[in-house]
Image (cartoon, rainbow, N blue to C red; front, side, top):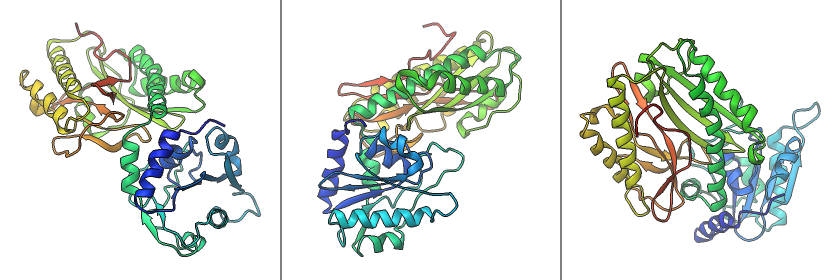
Length: 395
């Protein structure tokens, strides 16, 4: 059992108190992780987080070991999926009723996560259980018929500014991703299939990432595209069996999760040596990246770094090739809503935010992007990934 992240708990309790809410009930993976330090396996866990007093975690008994690595000491478990076990939802409702009764929450004003469209995956990636957007009637009954209020927007805002402990975990996820990018650089050579490269990258995360600096669970998803296929890199294309040819651009869109905390990175390499056009692309992309990075400071409007990157591209006559945003939030999910470094954003960067930085250039036959995860510090911005960004390009 770890010590609680008191910085996180204090922020959440302050928001609950400001809305006159007695407790928050969460079951979405990212919110369970944020409140408990525990990354659910099946996504069938629930946290009851009172405005006053200690929280309670409800989880399948099969995940007791995982729960004990978190920081909630009051864990209530239920059995499920064996012959004779009742429906998990009925077990959760029964335990919620017990908690509400014990903590004096019956008939009180309760918050829940009602406005989530995008959600994080539990450990069981391929069978996620999404949770709810409306309160189940059984939960209302268990709570004594009190008022349930949507706390989704507040949770999104709270998650947008990380605590020191959360920053350390996202930094660690980036270090694990570095292990996969090393394999990407090594394997991106003529004759290798995209699927061969992706397999080597994902294997590196499993074999080297698990156990790295105490990481218990690590997974990576590598989408590798090459040659003319890189032109569609802005639209999340998938890996194929295409063989890399000499002189091809090879691009990886790379998601890594380490104990529930995410990184989102991209690198582009040449399978061989740069030709003049590729060198010009890489030089222009680097200029946009550096201009946007320099503009990332607390108090700066979200749209300003995006504009800085686009202005830098004008010197190369390539502004029209940059078709998407410059950055999005990252940490509890692969893509978070805050911050949004976009031409139309109305937000403001704040210290503790983590954003992607991903200016990209896409034409009819090419795509070139470098993406990092960047921490907004009290004085500027710090990339969290340390892998080479423009291999083969002179500094």
